[in-house]
Length: 482
Image 1 (cartoon, rainbow, N blue to C red):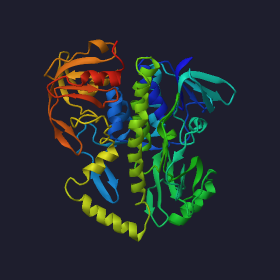
Image 2 (image 1 turned 135 degrees about the horizontal axis):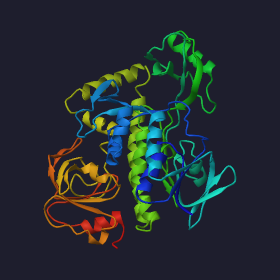
Image 3 (image 1 turned 180 degrees about the vertical axis):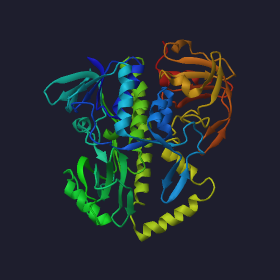
Image 4 (image 1 turned 90 degrees about the horizontal axis):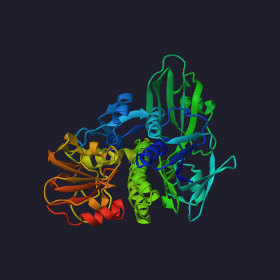
């Protein structure tokens, strides 16, 4: 019996597979596609916090070299400066899923993750000892846990009976990648229907996005649908031909009622669906995977109990709901309506005030996530700032200490910190910090004398001149003492 089976080899599934392998967990990924080839370039863009996660694992440069960074984001009609955010990555990375997937797959497979292509999962069954992924071929693949990372139409979620709740769709859009007559060119407009655009994506192809005149679901669009939409939006079908990808999406916004049902868990689009507005989808899935991976690994290795796994839903469900709220708010401005234009104008005035846009910029970038870990220092529950450090091994920085996805106990002066009973699970580092500890929106915070940093980069304990509470935090997040 395997430790974990992941259903779906998209960015979420690959990130989770790599996280589990770093922890020494036996993992197999089941993917219904026959090969690694992905139809269409798909969604694109990852924000600051997701780039930080890749940086924590030492692989961010692979992605940065493949894409283009943008230091601004838009909310309503206002450009927000991401460059002022306190992070080493104050930008969005423009990179399609087509390019993100193979980079994550190479990393996960390099760590020993196994991917089985052409393995379509149609259901799951579970008992007290484990869970079975049921394949269309009739095979049952058994593991201690099954994670559904199989997209918005997740077979795993449906089989587990987990409901999706949230606002229904109000409009639908067509997305297509094809060729047009003449040189590829950029087009764009917003009308009473919504957003319409065409822009070159290389190799002579154009990506077309068209809001449909009425809400449609289910059936895939055709080339004729695209041509009619182009004529309605731009007065010409542009001689559109030779499509390589046609799809339809809506602005439906739904979230799984729970991210876990016994030995079955959900991550990425299997747990939340929303408009692609704002480019939150891939990043949310990566953050789910990094939050879940180390927790699931400790439980699968019998080093921690069920309560640790329960914290996955408790932390990621509210974070996902907040991001989904942003996508709904942003989508309001993607239609030419006089009332919405009036709201946009007022919002632009508010956001023009110095500092007023930082909370929204931090939300878009994913840097404002704060898990509820109790009262205390402002760092508690937030992603740890990537402060420069001086250690016995030389110069370093906080995020570089997280390469192996292990908890790190940083002693920054102050009282001695005893981690002997967890020495097999926690890395103790003595260091001095160079520079201020700054958080988005909050600003500079008092420097800690000690930090317990979880493998996902969130702070689980803060020392303020003593070791009070450290033992409880170690037991809560690293399992019982050996």
